[in-house]
Amino acid sequence: MVLRKIVTLLLALAAGPVAGCGLLTSEAASGFVPQAGVCHQAPGDNASGKAYRPVDCTERHEAETFLVSRIAGPDAESDDPPATGSGAALRAYYSCATAAREFLGDDWAVGRLSLRLVLPTAEGWAADERWYRCDLVEIVALDLFEPSPRANSLKGALGSPSSPLRHGCYNAALDEYRELKSLPPASCTGPHRTEFAGIWWADDVPYGEEILSEEMMNGCYGVIARYVGLADDGEVRRRLLPLPLPPTDEDLAAGETSVLCLLHTDGKPLTRSLAGVGVRGLPPRR
Image (cartoon, rainbow, N blue to C red; front, top):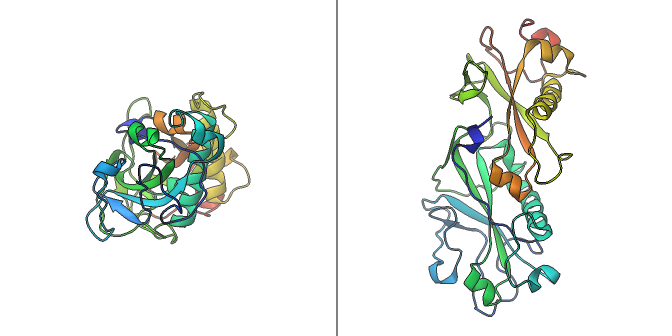
């Protein structure tokens, strides 16, 4: 699947968190440390002290900093910021993903969001800046990875099952090879053919390797079976088509393993969610 690769939101990486929200307790030699609880007019803005001009989150913005913390220990002794794929970078990504869950109320990947980690500039690192910050960006849609401007905080935004940021139902358009072409949203109580069923975590795939289509299909069959309330995926395989959306290349490089699993039917449109319906609530066998 290619939709999550249409427009990429880059990730800059760092080491794991030490503190919660707010300023770090000590400053870098340059005197610059960013703040948490502030927002930015565009993703990636304000990485240097010279250009640091955050805005209040009640103003129009495209990114929100929810955590600022420190790079410490051997990771801080490097001449350069942690490289993508390094142990320090992977630890940073996982720790910020964990912090994002607490901040949002659920995994960021279940919503129209992108997680971004920002490091000091090369100039800042040379001046002993050892902070890192974690930002969240709301995106327009699964098939349009562009920032969606906001004027309020994302804190607790995924805490409710009915949050408008959560992935929901769609009317997917497929090409002749059953590849996803577009994914217009639809009401889960109105006609729809496609529905978000959950996340398959490709944690067994070694870092740096591609997540194979067959692995994603099999993984998503299991996710869909649990979503509709079945103990195994036998009937799901006969009645529904999984549409896996893998991480972008940049997400994979950062250490992301979440594969979004959508269920899809080519038959009569659904008029209710398939969550927990059991075998009797599924479409007829294909």
